[in-house]
Image 1 (tube, rainbow, N blue to C red):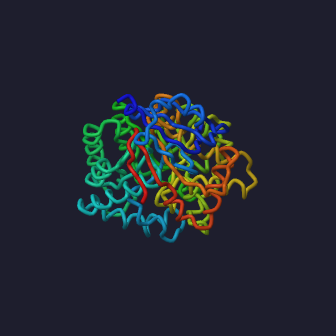
Image 2: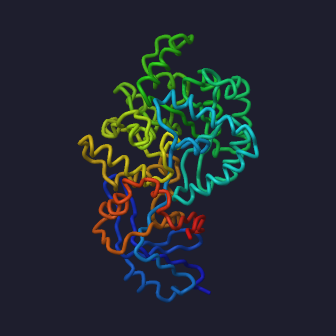
Image 3: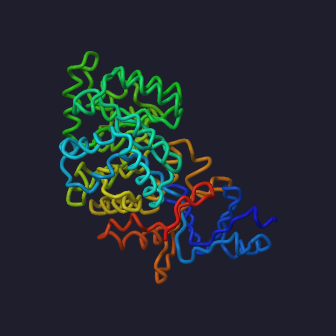
Length: 435
C-alpha cells in the first residue's frame, strides 16, 4: 500500500526561480504525494531513492517533453473570446466596434453559461491555472465564470457607469450594491473591477475600493495603455470636482483609492517617473500584455513597447497577461514569444525566455499572494504543472535553450501555441489531458 501514497512523473523539467534563474533537469523526476510536491531531482537519483515505491501504476514517463509550472495569466477578458482575432484598430475604436457589442450578448444567462463552459475548458487546455480575469457587467456572466474557472483565479464584473453604450451602462448605486453582493458571495475570489477611469466615476471607484480593501479582495483596471486614452481620461477628470488639478492617470486612481498591494493595473505602457514613484509607494502591480500591445500587423492594438527596465528600476512589481481579446491567442507561450520578440526587434537586452517564464508563472503567484503553494516546483507546493512535448531531435542544453527550441518554430503559425500542451495538472489532478 505504501506505493499508492506517491505519484512519480518523469520528463525534462523547467523550474523558474526568478528573472534570470531557472532550474533545468534534462532527465528529472517529480515526486507528488496527496497533490503536493515532495521532491524534484535528477531521474537517476530519484530511481535510487524511490525504487521501492515506484510502480507501473503510479509512475508516468512523459518522454521527451518539457514539464513546467502552470501559467498565471494576470490580465484577460473571458467575455472577449469571440473578438480576439477580429481586425484590430486603435483601442477606443476597437472597443466601440467589436468589444462592446460582443459583451452585450452576455446579458442572457444561457449564452453566458454555454460560453463559460467552453472558454474555461479551452483555457485549461493551454496550461493556464490561475490569474486575474475580467467578466462583463452582468451578474449572471460572473456567476458562470466563477462556476467554470478551473484553478486559482480572481474574477470581477466590469463596472461601467459613464461614457458607455446604453446597454452596458449601470447606475452608480447599482454597481456598488452588486459589488457588495458579490463580495459577500465570493469573498476574496471576487476582484473589484472598474473597467477604466473613462467608464467608472471616482465615487464608484472610491466606495467600491473601500469594500474590496475591507474584504481583502484584489482590484483591477486599465492604466495608460495608449496616449489617446490618457488624453481622454484627463479631459474628463479635469471637469470633475476635486480632480481639476490632477496631473496624471495614475494620480486619478490614487485619489480614487484604487492603488495598493492588491491592485493590478493592466498595461502601464506610458508612465512618467512621477507615476512610477506613486506605483512603487503604494505597492501597486503592473500587468504587461505584450501580444495586445504589439503592432497591428502582429494582431495587436499597436499601443507601444512596455519599458520593463524602467519599471524594475523604479521597483514596481509586474507580471504577464494575454489581455484576451486585445491579445489574439490564449496561450501564454505566445505572450512569452511576443515579449522576447518585440524587445529583440528594438534592441532591448534582458528580455529572455527564462524571464518571460518567470513573469508568466511564479511572478503572478507572488503578486496574488499564492507563491507559498504555487508558481514553481518548490517542496510542499501544490503539484501544478503542464506537459509540452518537444521534437525528439531537439536536445536542449539549458532552460533558455529549451524554451527557445519549443517556442521559436511556431512564430509564424501562432495559433498552434494554443494546442502545444498535452497535460495540465492542478493540485495533483489532471484537469486537461490531450488526445
